[in-house]
Length: 397
Image (cartoon, rainbow, N blue to C red; front, side, top):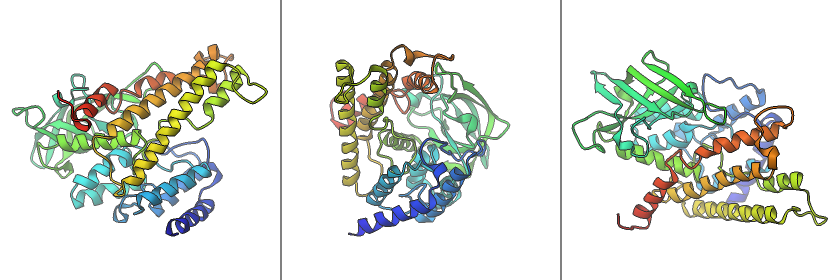
């Protein structure tokens, strides 16, 4: 009964506060001070949700959150979906760093960073991978040297998503080179707008540049922004990856990234548009019909599994190594959906430019090319299989 009362309250509040410009396709604010929010409804939607604490519904209220239970958060998501309300705020701050700070940061660090994240006043990027430290992340060489009240940082990170738009970075750095590689690593926060940081966007095959190279030449990180103990950042860094994979698998409590699945009915509509339909309303091509049905069944089963796990996880906290299962399956579904969206269009699905292709067709091509990275970022599927084998199933090395 209580949850149904809450549902009605949510419906009424959304109807009053979510304007038309914040529904359906549109901008997803990241909190970046470098990206202007163009639409007034989108701006108002972010402000009202932040005031309500619903940009991060399950965070404690004292840090800008809504203090909702996992069940209440589920209701909020359902009612937002019902009116096609866009997620008011996205980014690594709420999906990855925020949950990590809630677990490991001091009270002063939480008060300094979490409310700004919740209000959408700052965008974050991740400084993990390096040219010689990708899947073997513990081999990282970016160094942070103690200079009294700050760390001096020198080195390079790569595949830094959104670095050109980020205000701050969370990073793993080497603070003791004379111990085994998994030791001597620290987790630090640092501002991006400083003289010692150079950012070079990487142009991808999709034509976009979501990833960057980031160079550190005597950059600075304040000692107050060391998270956890010096030389003990590896465990914190791994926990953050679990939060990332949880979000990619659709289990995140913060809201973060959009789900890695196409909307129900999308593939059927594409197939019917390009292949025709029978008098009974089915996709005309039998092979394509079977392919779409199988994908939709798998997607629906995955969503039900997400819901079940969410209901069973009453604490609302990010799961441990089992997040790798959801990351593998969710990223594989997203990759397959991107493949199908171009394949179902035939030759019209592979256009790059020109008047012979619609905007939707050109976007599908770029999405398909960009989707090549889905099973790589956040830890490759191969790495996830190793985690599942060792830490979930308990198999020997």
